[in-house]
Length: 209
Image (cartoon, rainbow, N blue to C red; front, side, top):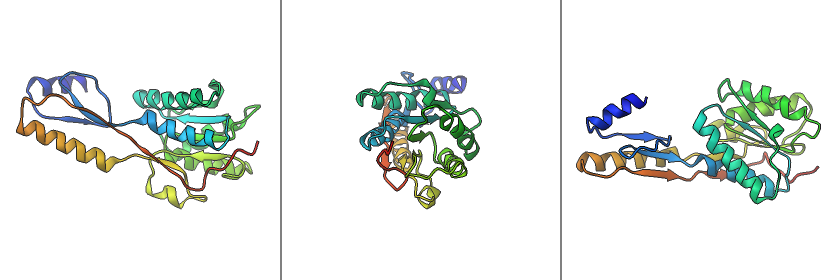
Protein backbone atom coordinates (compact mmCIF):
# COMPACT_ATOMS: atom_id res chain seq x y z
CA UNK A 1 0.00 0.00 0.00
CA UNK A 2 2.79 2.44 0.89
CA UNK A 3 4.42 1.75 -2.47
CA UNK A 4 1.21 2.74 -4.27
CA UNK A 5 0.90 5.91 -2.20
CA UNK A 6 4.47 6.86 -2.98
CA UNK A 7 3.67 6.51 -6.69
CA UNK A 8 0.63 8.77 -6.35
CA UNK A 9 2.70 11.35 -4.49
CA UNK A 10 5.50 11.21 -7.03
CA UNK A 11 3.13 11.60 -9.99
CA UNK A 12 1.21 14.35 -8.15
CA UNK A 13 -2.12 12.57 -8.59
CA UNK A 14 -4.78 13.98 -6.23
CA UNK A 15 -6.00 11.44 -3.65
CA UNK A 16 -7.47 11.27 -0.14
CA UNK A 17 -7.26 8.31 2.25
CA UNK A 18 -10.56 7.44 3.92
CA UNK A 19 -10.82 6.53 7.62
CA UNK A 20 -7.15 5.75 8.16
CA UNK A 21 -4.50 8.07 9.55
CA UNK A 22 -1.31 7.97 7.53
CA UNK A 23 1.05 10.67 8.75
CA UNK A 24 2.90 11.65 5.58
CA UNK A 25 3.53 15.29 4.61
CA UNK A 26 2.11 14.87 1.09
CA UNK A 27 -0.77 12.56 2.01
CA UNK A 28 -4.25 13.76 2.95
CA UNK A 29 -6.77 11.79 4.93
CA UNK A 30 -10.20 12.10 6.49
CA UNK A 31 -10.75 9.75 9.44
CA UNK A 32 -13.26 9.13 12.17
CA UNK A 33 -11.92 9.58 15.70
CA UNK A 34 -12.13 5.98 16.89
CA UNK A 35 -10.51 6.81 20.22
CA UNK A 36 -13.29 9.28 20.96
CA UNK A 37 -15.90 6.67 20.05
CA UNK A 38 -14.60 4.16 22.59
CA UNK A 39 -14.23 6.94 25.13
CA UNK A 40 -17.90 7.94 24.72
CA UNK A 41 -19.04 4.33 25.15
CA UNK A 42 -17.01 3.67 28.30
CA UNK A 43 -17.82 7.06 29.84
CA UNK A 44 -21.54 6.36 29.35
CA UNK A 45 -21.19 3.13 31.31
CA UNK A 46 -19.14 4.80 34.03
CA UNK A 47 -21.85 7.48 34.34
CA UNK A 48 -24.31 4.62 34.89
CA UNK A 49 -22.19 3.35 37.80
CA UNK A 50 -20.29 0.55 36.05
CA UNK A 51 -16.74 -0.07 37.20
CA UNK A 52 -16.12 -3.54 35.76
CA UNK A 53 -16.23 -2.83 32.02
CA UNK A 54 -15.24 -5.51 29.53
CA UNK A 55 -13.80 -4.52 26.17
CA UNK A 56 -13.89 -6.70 23.04
CA UNK A 57 -11.57 -4.99 20.56
CA UNK A 58 -11.06 -5.54 16.83
CA UNK A 59 -8.11 -6.85 14.88
CA UNK A 60 -6.88 -3.96 12.68
CA UNK A 61 -3.66 -2.54 14.22
CA UNK A 62 -4.46 1.17 14.10
CA UNK A 63 -8.09 0.61 15.09
CA UNK A 64 -6.99 -1.56 18.04
CA UNK A 65 -4.71 1.17 19.35
CA UNK A 66 -7.14 4.05 18.95
CA UNK A 67 -10.09 2.25 20.50
CA UNK A 68 -7.97 0.96 23.37
CA UNK A 69 -6.71 4.48 24.09
CA UNK A 70 -10.31 5.70 24.33
CA UNK A 71 -11.19 2.85 26.69
CA UNK A 72 -8.16 3.58 28.88
CA UNK A 73 -8.74 7.35 28.90
CA UNK A 74 -12.31 6.96 30.14
CA UNK A 75 -11.19 4.55 32.86
CA UNK A 76 -8.42 6.93 33.93
CA UNK A 77 -10.84 9.85 34.16
CA UNK A 78 -13.24 7.69 36.17
CA UNK A 79 -10.53 6.62 38.61
CA UNK A 80 -10.88 2.97 37.57
CA UNK A 81 -7.86 0.67 37.37
CA UNK A 82 -7.18 -0.92 33.98
CA UNK A 83 -7.40 -4.72 34.23
CA UNK A 84 -5.98 -6.70 31.33
CA UNK A 85 -8.35 -9.63 31.93
CA UNK A 86 -11.26 -7.40 30.92
CA UNK A 87 -9.76 -6.84 27.45
CA UNK A 88 -10.25 -9.33 24.62
CA UNK A 89 -8.80 -8.77 21.14
CA UNK A 90 -10.53 -10.78 18.43
CA UNK A 91 -8.59 -12.25 15.50
CA UNK A 92 -11.26 -13.71 13.21
CA UNK A 93 -13.05 -10.59 12.01
CA UNK A 94 -15.58 -8.24 13.52
CA UNK A 95 -18.55 -10.60 13.23
CA UNK A 96 -21.13 -12.34 15.43
CA UNK A 97 -19.00 -15.47 15.86
CA UNK A 98 -16.12 -13.60 17.48
CA UNK A 99 -18.43 -11.79 19.89
CA UNK A 100 -20.14 -15.04 20.78
CA UNK A 101 -16.82 -16.74 21.55
CA UNK A 102 -15.20 -13.75 23.27
CA UNK A 103 -18.10 -13.37 25.68
CA UNK A 104 -17.18 -16.57 27.54
CA UNK A 105 -13.67 -15.35 28.36
CA UNK A 106 -15.22 -12.35 30.14
CA UNK A 107 -18.15 -14.14 31.75
CA UNK A 108 -15.93 -16.89 33.17
CA UNK A 109 -13.77 -14.46 35.16
CA UNK A 110 -13.98 -14.68 38.98
CA UNK A 111 -15.44 -11.17 38.89
CA UNK A 112 -17.06 -10.85 35.46
CA UNK A 113 -17.76 -7.39 34.03
CA UNK A 114 -21.14 -5.75 34.57
CA UNK A 115 -20.93 -4.25 31.09
CA UNK A 116 -19.22 -4.91 27.76
CA UNK A 117 -18.08 -2.48 25.05
CA UNK A 118 -17.50 -4.04 21.64
CA UNK A 119 -15.64 -3.02 18.47
CA UNK A 120 -18.66 -3.54 16.21
CA UNK A 121 -22.41 -4.02 16.34
CA UNK A 122 -22.01 -7.51 14.87
CA UNK A 123 -19.69 -8.49 17.73
CA UNK A 124 -22.27 -7.09 20.16
CA UNK A 125 -25.00 -9.22 18.53
CA UNK A 126 -22.83 -12.30 19.07
CA UNK A 127 -22.43 -11.28 22.72
CA UNK A 128 -26.22 -10.94 23.00
CA UNK A 129 -26.70 -14.52 21.80
CA UNK A 130 -24.15 -15.97 24.23
CA UNK A 131 -25.54 -13.99 27.16
CA UNK A 132 -29.03 -15.30 26.44
CA UNK A 133 -27.75 -18.88 26.30
CA UNK A 134 -26.14 -18.40 29.68
CA UNK A 135 -29.33 -17.06 31.22
CA UNK A 136 -28.20 -13.44 31.44
CA UNK A 137 -30.44 -10.52 30.49
CA UNK A 138 -29.50 -7.31 28.69
CA UNK A 139 -29.45 -4.79 30.31
CA UNK A 140 -30.75 -6.08 33.67
CA UNK A 141 -27.76 -8.37 34.27
CA UNK A 142 -25.19 -6.89 31.90
CA UNK A 143 -25.06 -3.79 29.71
CA UNK A 144 -23.73 -3.94 26.13
CA UNK A 145 -22.57 -1.24 23.70
CA UNK A 146 -21.79 -1.78 20.02
CA UNK A 147 -19.94 0.30 17.45
CA UNK A 148 -21.01 1.44 13.93
CA UNK A 149 -24.81 1.85 14.28
CA UNK A 150 -25.62 -0.56 11.45
CA UNK A 151 -29.35 -0.72 10.56
CA UNK A 152 -30.10 -3.94 12.48
CA UNK A 153 -28.72 -2.49 15.73
CA UNK A 154 -31.99 -0.71 16.47
CA UNK A 155 -34.00 -3.89 15.88
CA UNK A 156 -32.20 -6.05 18.42
CA UNK A 157 -33.95 -7.12 21.60
CA UNK A 158 -33.30 -4.83 23.34
CA UNK A 159 -32.28 -2.15 20.79
CA UNK A 160 -28.51 -1.76 20.92
CA UNK A 161 -26.77 1.31 22.30
CA UNK A 162 -23.90 2.02 19.91
CA UNK A 163 -21.41 4.49 18.48
CA UNK A 164 -22.54 6.08 15.22
CA UNK A 165 -19.78 6.65 12.69
CA UNK A 166 -20.58 9.59 10.37
CA UNK A 167 -19.68 7.91 7.07
CA UNK A 168 -21.72 10.38 5.02
CA UNK A 169 -19.78 13.32 6.46
CA UNK A 170 -16.58 11.38 5.86
CA UNK A 171 -17.37 11.05 2.15
CA UNK A 172 -18.48 14.65 1.76
CA UNK A 173 -15.29 15.99 3.33
CA UNK A 174 -13.12 13.66 1.24
CA UNK A 175 -14.74 14.80 -2.02
CA UNK A 176 -14.42 18.45 -0.97
CA UNK A 177 -10.71 18.02 -0.28
CA UNK A 178 -10.21 16.13 -3.53
CA UNK A 179 -11.91 18.87 -5.56
CA UNK A 180 -9.66 21.47 -3.93
CA UNK A 181 -6.63 19.45 -4.98
CA UNK A 182 -7.89 19.10 -8.55
CA UNK A 183 -8.49 22.84 -8.80
CA UNK A 184 -5.27 23.80 -7.06
CA UNK A 185 -2.30 21.46 -7.46
CA UNK A 186 -0.35 23.46 -4.88
CA UNK A 187 -2.92 22.83 -2.13
CA UNK A 188 -1.28 21.68 1.10
CA UNK A 189 -2.13 18.24 2.48
CA UNK A 190 -5.14 18.05 4.77
CA UNK A 191 -5.62 15.90 7.88
CA UNK A 192 -9.23 15.97 9.10
CA UNK A 193 -10.76 14.08 12.03
CA UNK A 194 -14.52 13.65 12.44
CA UNK A 195 -16.11 12.90 15.81
CA UNK A 196 -18.52 9.96 16.16
CA UNK A 197 -21.54 10.12 18.47
CA UNK A 198 -23.19 7.94 21.10
CA UNK A 199 -26.63 6.57 20.22
CA UNK A 200 -28.45 5.68 23.45
CA UNK A 201 -30.95 2.85 23.20
CA UNK A 202 -32.07 0.17 25.66
CA UNK A 203 -29.06 -2.13 26.09
CA UNK A 204 -27.55 -0.17 29.00
CA UNK A 205 -28.81 0.28 32.54
CA UNK A 206 -27.35 1.39 35.88
CA UNK A 207 -24.96 -1.14 37.40
CA UNK A 208 -26.78 -3.46 39.77
CA UNK A 209 -23.77 -5.24 41.26
